[in-house]
Image (cartoon, rainbow, N blue to C red; front, side, top):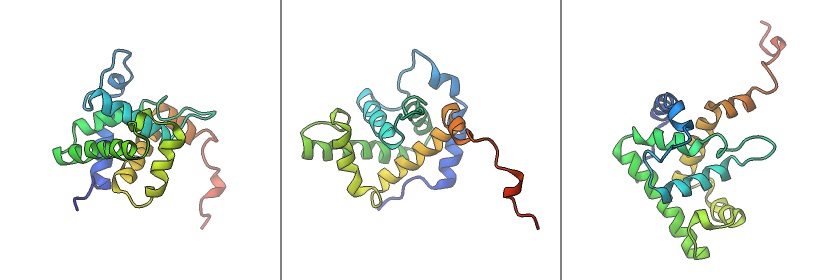
Length: 158
């Protein structure tokens, strides 16, 4: 079985992706890597991973856009594996609900993902990438640091 992107490569690509900040925020943005259907599926998946609550979710932070930029510079094998993972989500959704993943309710989407959450390489990679990208956006950074810096007394005093 082919491995997904390793962590070091993931961080390197994430850093390069974040240089595309203005591009991903543009109002006239179009998917740079995914086709419109894949992008819609990715939006649903990333928002399920980091939903909007009283704080911005993955959609608000444009995580799907950054992920597209991220994969546009990835190795072809990594690109194919991620797109294959999105297609797999649709096939699973079609088998269970006769609809594509993005057209299912949030409960149906969760029902598909919950049983595979710890064992599926694609879903684990999507969670990792979504989290890394989200925490690198202004929305995620604000959430990560909303309590301010840790107190000086937190560090070891030795």
